[in-house]
Length: 505
Ligand code: HEM
Image (cartoon, protein in one colour):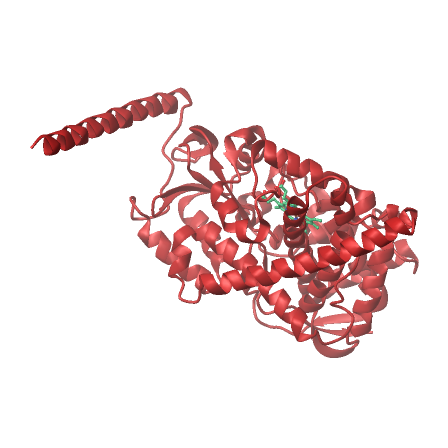
C-alpha cells in the first residue's frame, strides 16, 4: 500500500515542480519580450503544434527537386521572416539582411551551428572539423586551417594551368553537345585533391571516367546529400522511401576510405621529400595535408581534410557551372567577357595581378553567385533566449523573440532574389547591375562574420582563371538545353540536368 502512495506523491510533486518551472519560464520570457519590444511573428504553417501541413509541403518540394522555389514562395506568402514548427522543432525562417547580420555577426555568440548539423555530418566529417564544432573547439579548428587558406598557399596558378590543359584536351570543340558541369566538377575534384593532398586525383586524365572514380564521386555526393537531408529534416528524413541508413553508411565508408588512401599516399610523398631534402621546391605551395602534418593529430587532420574537400569541390564546381549556364544563354555577356579578357590579358596566361583587372568578370561571378548561391541556405540554433532585430509586427519591422533551442534558417537564396532589394528583375541574370550597387548584408554568397567562408579567394581565383582560359580558347558557346534549371540539393546545390552546351573552337 505504501508504494502506490509514494508513487502518487512523487508524481504530484514532479507535476507541481514542472508546472512551477513552466510558469517561471513563461513569466520570465514575457518580461524579456516586453523589455526588448518583441512583436508577433507570422506563422508559416496552418498546424501550430507540429507544423504537419508544412512538413508535407516541404517533403514534397524536396522530393520534386523544387525546394528553393518552395522556400522563396513561402517568404512571399508569409513575409521575410516567419516561424514554423517541424514536429517539435521551433524554426524561424528569414531572408532579412538585418537578421543575417545579427545571427552571423553582432549576436554571433548566441547562435551555434548546432548539434543537428554536427550529428548529421559526424559519420563523414568526424568531430574535430570547423563544420562540426562550436566555441573554443571551432576557434581551434579554424586557426589550424588558416595557414593553408592564405592566398599565397591556396592558389597555385601553375597547377591551375596544368588542370586547365587537361580539361581543354577532353573538351569537344566541334559543337558536339557536352555537359560542362561534369567537366567543371572533374576539374574541381582534381584541383581540390591537389590543394589538399599535393596530387590531383586524375579526373581529367581521360574523356571517360573509370568506373572506380564514378563510384567514389557518387558515394561522396550521396554522403553529402544524406547529411544535408538529416540536418534539414531530422528524423523525418527517414520517411523518405528512397533513404536507407545502410546505403548511407556504405557511401560514407567509401568516401572515408578514399580520403585515407589519399592521406597514406601523401604521407609517403611527405616522408620521401623530407629524406631527399627537396622541401624548398614545394614550400611555396604546401598542400593542406603538409601544413596539418606539422600542427595537428592524425584523426583531426582526417576530419579537416574530409570537410574541406566537401566545402571546396562542389561550391566552386557550381560557381563555374552556373556561370557558364548563364554565359551560354547570354551571347552578349560572352562577347563582353571575351573582349575584356582579350584586351587585358593580351593572349598571356592569367596571373593573380591580371585577374584583378577584369571588372566585368567580377560582376559576372557576383551575379552568378547571387542568383545561384552554391550554398543556398544555412542554419543556426539559439543557445540562449534572445531576439532577432526584425520580423515582428504588421510590417515585419519589430524585433522578435527567439527561445533557446530554436532554429534560425538563413536563406541566402531567397535574400539574393528579393524584389524589394534587387528590383523587379531580381530573377534575371544582369551582371551590369553590380556597376552601381553596394549591397552590404544583402549579398552573402560566402556568408559573413567569424564563420565567413575561408576559401572565398581560392574559389574566385579558380572561377576567374578557368573562365578566362576558356574565353581565350574558344570562339563561341551555345546552350543546348531549353529546360529550366532543376535543382539537386546536397549541402550545396547544382543543376540536376547538367550544363549542356555546344562549344566551337
Ligand atoms: C564559390 C565557392 C564557395 C562558396 C559560395 C562558399 C560558401 C560558403 C558559405 C556560405 C559558408 C558558410 C556556411 C555556414 O556558415 O553554414 C562557407 C563555409 C566554409 N567554406 Fe566555403 N564556399 C566556397 C568555396 C570554398 C572553398 C574553395 C573552400 C576551401 C578551400 C571553402 C571552405 C569552407 C570552410 C572550411 C567553411 C566552414 C567555415 C566555418 O564554419 O568556420 N569554401 N562557405
